[in-house]
Length: 418
Image (cartoon, rainbow, N blue to C red; front, side, top):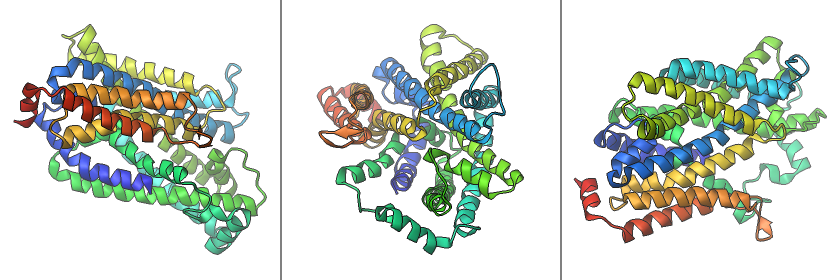
């Protein structure tokens, strides 16, 4: 539900306004460039701070995808690969990163967009097939039997509220806030052909997303019921898709399902690497090192940046005990808190200024990092942990409002209003 409401309001409130203002403020191609055009008096500082935030959190986000790729190879191809003494997990990371780097470096935004479409179709098909077979195939038992099995194990598994504290519920619901600040999502709004295409894109995107979410949730819930009914010992819940694919299907179909999982991983990683590369090239290299750099030179530097960010992400993902969801949650909160309040207010509150924008980004990102470092996302004041996006989003929102009000600049305000 959190993902659904977050994505819907992002498409409804942010997408049309951002597309319109992107054109109005110089057709920027990155979030830092848009913010610099929107707040020209603080352009240099904004581009620098936002580029740093993007690279830090995208390295973590990209690492989550590499962890998923590593786990796929570790579970599905155990013992098959033996390269230089590397573990199956490490080989999986290397292969996943290598394939993504190849088509992202060579093809750029167009290749990423085209592969996203194909990969999206593969993912959606897999997320329809797998839950259906788990529920209604041999050993599944259907909805009634699966529900009974889960109720016998833990009645709270099928309840929206039982066993969930208010803090737990709030932490789950506020995942939706993250959508407003994800650069790899927002940059797609900026690239929509015309404002008239936004409703069509929203309808297609939301339809695909709802089908995928229902399929993923069904697979997780009913996959657990299937495992219990058939005496399966699933040591790592994040490998349930891989294990069931291997058990329930012919090898050819299993291969297709593995490809679907890799498609999900590669689609996410490629988008993140591309945004990181664009930010480093446009908002660091061209800004500080080579202001007169040609477009061809920037393309080549962008390719180098893609590789560098990918290598940093691989280092972060190198720990085989890493959890995909934990890494995603950290990066999601970081982007949501650093950019979410700023994007919303810059589009809807004309009095937002450059100083407020910088304050919001710094406060939001810092709050998330400090919250994670103190372990308050795991346990807070003796109770359950509070998801770091909550304090980060609130703190950033307040920082923008307060600093923009205190440092109001008539000249900048006039620039925004005209």
